[in-house]
Amino acid sequence: MPRHKTISDEQVLDTLLGVIMKTGPEGLTFALSAKACGLSSATLVQRYGNREALVEAILLRAWDQLQAETDAADAEETVTPAGAIELLMRLMPPDAAELHATDGLLLLREDIRNPKLRSRGAAWGRSLAAALGRRLSQDPRQAHQLGWQMAALWQGAHTWWAFTRDAPAEEAIRQSLQEWVDRL
Image (cartoon, rainbow, N blue to C red; front, side, top):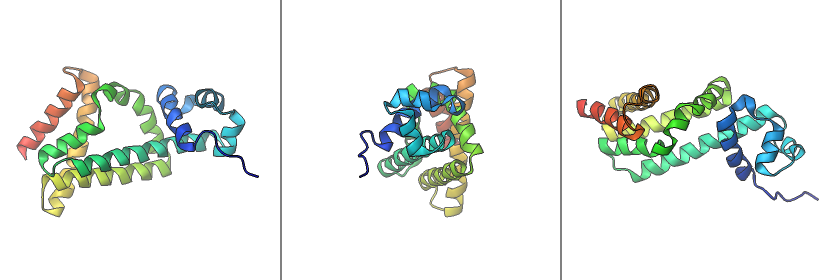
């Protein structure tokens, strides 16, 4: 008779995302994971097989959550250039800017190295660029180009903010996006 899960996979993966944000993928162990989520190491091995599969499952869950946030923002924000800016700002809460600019890079490295995670990230990028492009142009070709440009600007503005810290993250990134939109 199979045992019932007392803690769902989603709960485990959500808890361990917080851990992996602090330790990086290389620092995540079954012992540390077990302590964080309240399951035994043996149970985690039964569910995920090995550490690499556990890391992959955590990061795939994170991509799924980011996609859900993107889909919600896409459905709720106006289909205007201002709506494109608001969509991006929703995906980068000001209180998480520091974490995303520092520890988030450790996860991005893993996402780029792992083919399955890289594919998932690319799919999200296409989805984001399409959502932005719809807000920037009605011409499909131009919308495609502008959507990717705005996504790249957003990421670049976030990265440069992490170095300069000339203003609060939300203010600096929003200003970069608005200046770009104003030039369109």
